[in-house]
Amino acid sequence: RWKKVAEICDRGAQLYAAYLGGNEQALEELVKMYGDPLTRFAYCIVRDDGCAEDVTADTFAVLIVKRKHFRGESKFRTWLYSVARNRAIDYVRKSRRCGTLSGLENVLTCPDDQSLEKSERLNKLYACMQQLQDGYKEVLCLSYFDGFSVGEICHILKKSAKQVYNLLARAKSSLKNIMLKEGYSYEDF
Image 1 (cartoon, rainbow, N blue to C red):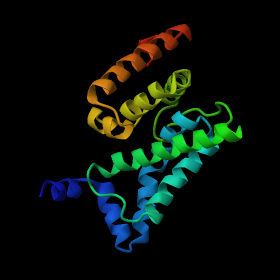
Image 2: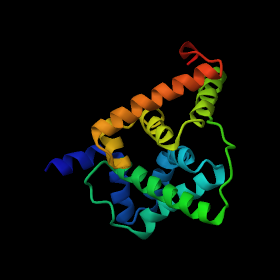
Image 3: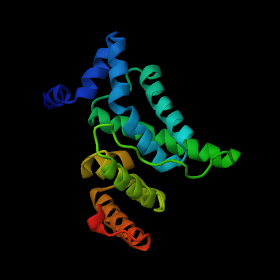
Image 4: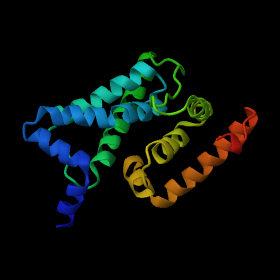
């Protein structure tokens, strides 16, 4: 019974169920809802615009090809980010073997309705984040940009709550040090 209540509250799960029921527009809605955040998250792992977009496309391909893979054991969004993370890690492994992964080239952009000042602050923050080690970037992106709870982050990263709390604390501390080295203060953000 609890699963049914959770599914009703989970818009992504509702849309996916509608898609599985034959509603093609539900898939389009999922892409609109999760496309940009998934691409931003994938970028934290692969560090290349084109590759991040490929990872996002591969993630949505899983929704199409493995149609009934989502079992409702977590929120749909959490499951989708887990799929994206696994795809991104696979892409990095493959790229390292082939030597095709390029360096940093992206900055975070804000939706049109946000101020230029806020956009500039986020770009600075995101640029500082790119200097962090991969695990730190992932956990900060999931927590602050995408708003996942610690429990959801545990599921996505396959870590315990204590590990996630420690990772968040270390990531914030490292980010603060980088920001200070770059000449920014916490008040700027």
